[in-house]
Image (tube, rainbow over all chains, first blue to last red; front, side, top):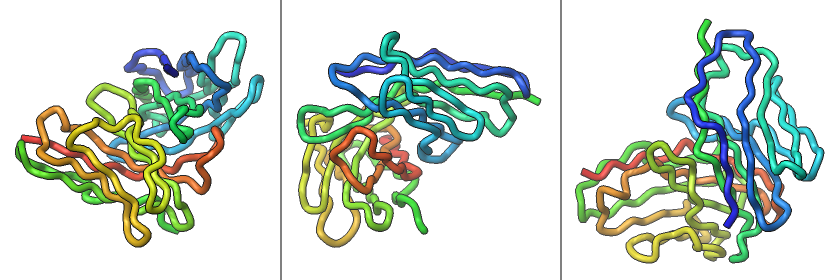
Length: 115
Length: 116
């Protein structure tokens, strides 16, 4: 079945450091790819998405490029802030074969940014 | 412009009791998804519903779990005779459409179920 693998955390960075969170996927179809962010005690919020190969999703200084040849969707930010501390989930959406386009998530990467 | 609402936010049940989790989708959304997040794990799909219909329940355990999305009122995820392994965070998401891969799903804050 479909799966998403993302780098294990936790990741601790100093403010203004460069961030990369690796994400690779396996899918039988042609999925759309997403990054979601979860702040403590809250639900998931969509951070960015890409729907086809070579698309770049971007939002709030975060970027990720859909790489079909390497089946990857790595998240990057040039200069992290304390407010970026959260858990980040990589996810794909593909047809389940049972009537829905469901999200398949990675396990999440916890990011802590220290001043 | 309320987002997806879930209640209760926290629910404690003893083994053998029933748990009912409610989800009100965003206004205008008629597609609802339920996901479960076990400790230290990502979210796992459980079920996808449209108004009055279960479309895909391939992620739902075969026994004790059921879901509905009536014509009026919230979607309900029901767990009968809860066991300790049911302790998890249950998230509901809604979307405007449901039949394409790039539809954004909007998530509620989750219900954290603890089974004693």
